[in-house]
Length: 115
Length: 117
Image (cartoon, rainbow over all chains, first blue to last red; front, side, top):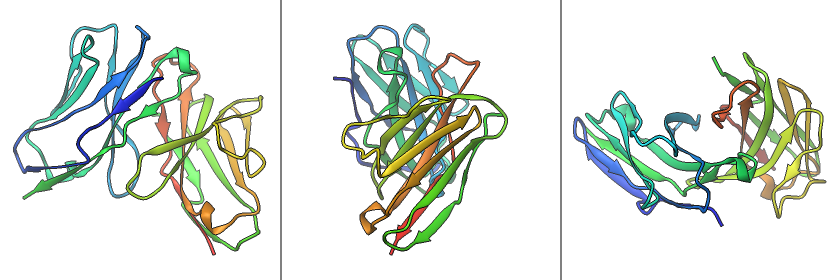
């Protein structure tokens, strides 16, 4: 079965500091996609970053970057220069063609940012 | 681009009545739309996958006669909660995949909060 595990239910970071959220997944597929979504208090899901499994280079989007370790099936999210607006639930998700492109979700990590 | 809307954003209904939630892709055509349910402080639970012009595929444990899904066009999918009960109260989210893209990305609506009294 394909699963996504986020082992940190809650985390906090000081404003302007760096924080890393962990995510591991399990699949026997070789072609898949990984995502980090942010859900702020408004509950609108926002795509933070996307990683294609066939790409060796780690994806980056401004202050957000990932550490994709395919052999270890690990996909952590690093947030640099944390801002108050980064406070939200962060969900790691996985999909591939084999599961009809459904997203498999982790349980989420609640990130607090301290001023 | 890639905006998805949901209507209504919140709704209160009485037990035994039905309520319809609309999900629209505003600036793209969606081959596939997904319906999720989310309880407070929990992850998203996929209820069903709908493809335009065909019957929805429901996840195990989701009652298809209770949660009716219709995907009538490439820009509109509806979820109807029939004979609603208080336990159906939840936050319902839809998402859509673009017709012309192959990157597997889903675009999410803002969600609908349903309260059944």
